Image (cartoon, rainbow, N blue to C red; front, side):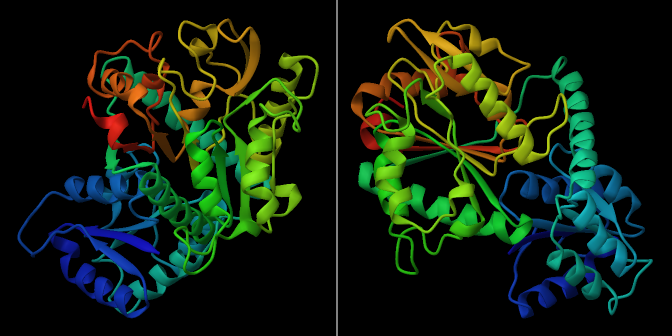
Length: 407
């Protein structure tokens, strides 16, 4: 488990001892400073630790200042951070089990160096229970966070956390994606007990799914905890699951038929329903039940895989379609004129609620669109992929050289 740790000058000595302790216990500490006992400002280090956790660079965070109060207040201003100030073992594990606390805050002038490792141990070994009452309350907390962020964004432009990686070819792109998939799966299961991922259709991810089917110690993805992995689909064609155009069928043939994943962990879109809108409604109900959502809440996927077409569409968000502006529904049925067919898709708010979004894009025919989406002016009605920027997560673009040649 990767643990981001930081402190101001008052917590420097305790931080140093905890870094050594974490290493001795087999954790991977990410020391974000401070690096001496010279006076510094605690908000700077609250930001560093909070950003590391919210972006997924760290699984948990530990933050230290003199009393712990200031660092806790500062960290909780960051989207995706749930920081708790704890001075006893019960609070350190209960905060995770009931409230999904992801940053432990300690007061170096309140607790001693002997007690701190016990609190950190309790914090890192606790798991969020996701019981109905706790999930309901956590969703209300997240709704408050979204409301505050929405108010701020009326005055400030969105800050987008984007990584771009260019690989030589589709094979290397797929291997990089497999490595990331495996890492995210193991981290999510270690931190929260399950891994929820939305899969993409299309030709590019097919090679990734074939690699995931090779899961094992020497496979690119490593050992994937399939028993704790829940698979969803970002979009689907309005066809039965055995149809040649079905995204589910492609994943089943290449991946699901070859791995030991419990059938109850596979949540496909019921696209065989003759009414696309009903199929979308049923899938939204599935999301609400499995994520324990109340009205107005959004599911938070650990990972969403997306592709992009030469026209800039992603999932089934096509240019100049009404679904691009959908804000209420989690899943929508949308008519795509170019195919004269309905598609069923997760909506932009759901995609942007993910912890991580990973785009897989290959091919020369997409190079100009890649440049327009990543480096051009905002025009999401024409380039729907520009809509995707998780409000409390990260976006990773994996491109082969042909797709990246216009950047």
